[in-house]
Image (tube, rainbow, N blue to C red):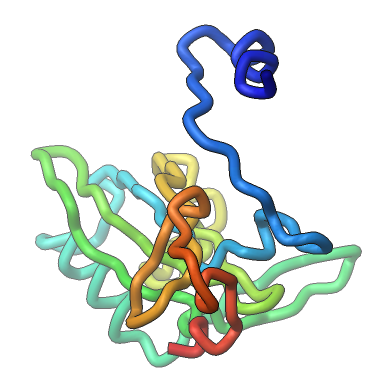
Amino acid sequence: ALFARLAAAAPRGFEVRRLIRIPAGRSLFDLIGLQVYRVVLPKERLPHAAPGAWLVARIMQAPDLPVRRERDGVVKTRDVRPLVHRAEVIGESLTEIELRLELRRIGDASARPDEVVRAAGGFPAGEEFWWRITRTANLVAGDNDTWHTPTNLPEGPNARSRPEYYAR
């Protein structure tokens, strides 16, 4: 009955395949430990002959990636490098490069993909106007460095989000 009600309220083409119960007192956002992004950048805006390899190296080999955030009139600088799980080139054309960027959430700490790319590349604020950024997955930590979609959680004692997984 619930599936039928959701289907009736959903936009055309949207299909509900599975429902999961979130533990009491938690939100789905609390369970997410890794967010995956697709980032497309125009080569003409990048300063190097091999822009994809250059940018990935700048992200992954950086000792820190400081970003400035303003909230309620207070500006703070925070290092987002510990939140970068992986960066890789997944596509390249004559005019663009395409990156896959995996960013951890640790407690309330998170990084935005535009912050990571801007800090690694030394780009000025506003440069992200030229980029296309799409979140492609929200994942929950599992055993042995595995990640699962929230609707594909393994069963058993390790089927919950645990902060010690995020320290890897």
